[in-house]
Length: 440
Image 1 (tube, helix red, strand yellow):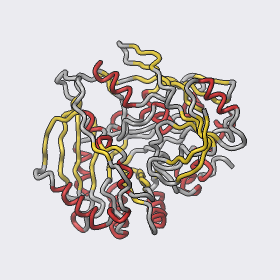
Image 2 (cartoon, one colour):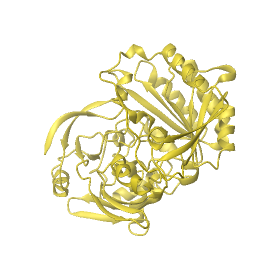
Image 3 (cartoon, helix red, strand yellow):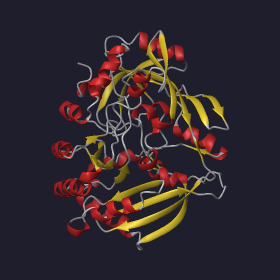
Image 4 (cartoon, helix red, strand yellow):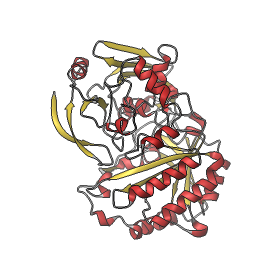
């Protein structure tokens, strides 16, 4: 089944017209690839990448390829079609005592999307990225050829596909190692930091915690610059694997663009920061609100209005942490374009995947509504990130320049060589890959 429609990423910017194929079976995926015409084609899951990485002239939706193919109850190794979502996996396996080894801030992404983005979570400093736990990938590189790639077989293609943003082929299935847990709950500790310096110190003090993440006030100033709430957590051992009762909200319509402004964000940030009245608070929470706080609000992207938004996420090396974060935060404060959703995490060492985002250091993610003057601010932030040896996250990106990308991802030429070797360059492409100069 194919049809022309308007599509966009989670940030709802840009909106494009595309020929969308929505097959039920593998033969439909192959047919879509065979009949794609002259333009580039990209696979698309649940559309949760923020920018234009799943946008193309020809799009193949893989959500309906969502079967569980095999599971070893002793090792926790599972093989699934790439269209299955992380939410599907959690619903099946948490009651059996298994959890995702790495999870991003939403469970509403597909398994194929998690691999293509090589997603990271609150435990990168101890566990690395998602693809560290992927044993093999079944990849459609052309209508007649499906390759099984791993760290042993077609290893070059494996390391290009993990984090490769769908540009090496269509991921059909993934074999993944799950993590054993004895509870659906997390023992959480919330620590209050008065500024960015104290927040970074708390990350270091709590470096042995399995999970750590900080909400950061990106509009506070002076001695309160970067004041934060740091949450650290460990899986509980209470042997309660039942799911929690789910209560969700829905944003029914686009909010007025003017609703989010410097004053409303400052008010929210002040109230949110001061809701924690003690220096340290301990509690026990279900994994849903700990890992996926925004999943409880359906269509939360409508909060930013009809023009959409972008999430700007960067990482800078640890040695630049305090100085770099301070300078970047001051630039954001001065612009008045702060975000009520600002998340700070610490990363461990980078992996061998050619376009994987994390490197040892600190990462900050902020949401900005699309408005006049935003992209010039982000250009200035890009320059600062590059000066400190950092880079931007491709899964969140919607406007990074080709120069910025090629300067900050040193293995891009090797990535291109792998694509050329397997004959996929020129076949698999997105609006993002064209913008970054990967399809010239």
